[in-house]
Length: 440
Image (cartoon, rainbow, N blue to C red; front, side, top):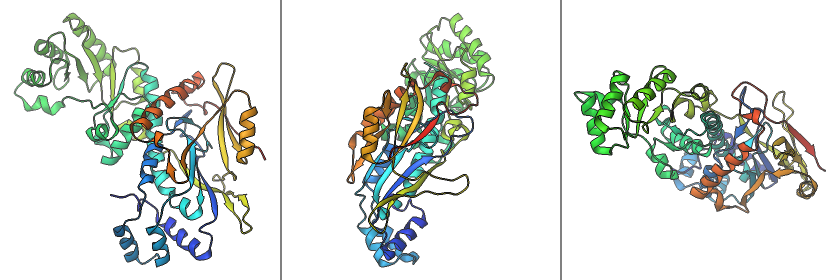
């Protein structure tokens, strides 16, 4: 399935009107940003950039798309001809995938004609809004988990394609693997998982189920021990697999108490190296509450793929600069109550203190020359924008496995740069302030 019709209707109707009145080819700058973080969140995580760029490379209107639009009877032939030849030839720059962001951070800047840029609004927002929400939640979870791995088990709680995207976004924020095989195949992720309660219920006894699983997968497997009685399940697991059993999984009850009891029981049976993994509606707060429990890894499902209660990042895509009738570029902005935007083309830098910690997010408004002069003369700032697309050509380092690897590294480095209070799960303001500075 192509991506061309993953577009809101008003983008097509605006295109048609612009072609008619002669404004379609006006040079424009669009900006993708969010006005606020979810309540209580201290930072967000950019994710989905690589997926958006991959979709952009194949953003084409096929004959069947055009026939559907023609049959709908809204668009004229001139507009349909434009769509048939559509190719994005502009420039896009923005935050590297995996980067931390804050309110009003200019996450993506699209420079093109009005016609080319307006058609990308829904595609860009639908990808970045969801992926960033998942990555932002996942980052809080991996922070709470510390050195213990988090594993994505959310495929059964999301749309089938959203589950694949969520797995990729979670890995950017530090997750170690996914239960979803399509996500593993498509993005080169580690696939994890062994058996569900249905496997134990299928057999005449728990021992028979465990023995069959070990015979198939070896003693390094993970046995689910809470289908019936946990204490008996652990005893049976070690009886069948021996003290070299890889892990046991707990999926219900008071996980902290159970983990402590199971750890003590495993050690008494000589299974000192057998790990304990826990699942069951975990989120960052539940993970943090288990910090002192003898847990080795966490399987996270529903709360991950729903952004831990915040399934969107509230990002918007606004026109901030346009060519006027005299051919001069001029800033434009909304003045709507609670929805105002700031006109003018922007870039961003992160101001660092003497310890290398982030002190503020600086949004720079002004010409390219003015921005370059400021960055060159400023002390202790890190530029945040990178080129993503130049003259219609996508920079390949942001795509595929290489792009994902870069995003993982970028997130780890960026999060480590934040002040320590940024990692608290308690309600608070954004970790650092955002300052807008006019340079011209």
